[in-house]
Picture: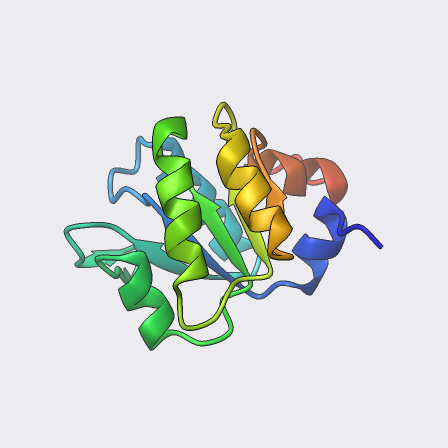
Length: 141
């Protein structure tokens, strides 16, 4: 059975967000805030660390997955050119998320092929917030 957006969203509790900006005007911040409001635990990954939306921000993907357990989704806000490197990094984590979800406007065939070949569900070029709102008929932002 192929995983669907709805299935992944319904069965996930923790979402790591790679490229989460502390700037409230950035899309990554708005998406994270929305996901928090919907009951998901967000794990910010931001190179400068600190705290974002009241949660400790990890400086790297490796650091987040070494410290946090049971991350279900890795939501990626990185340029398309960086996605293959992100995919390679995912394969070297202490455990793998069940899904890598790449935001709207971002695509990389090599990253998609690599992760799907290893059994990781991979969605690209779709906003997790917009999809959540569509699936669960939630018009609140």
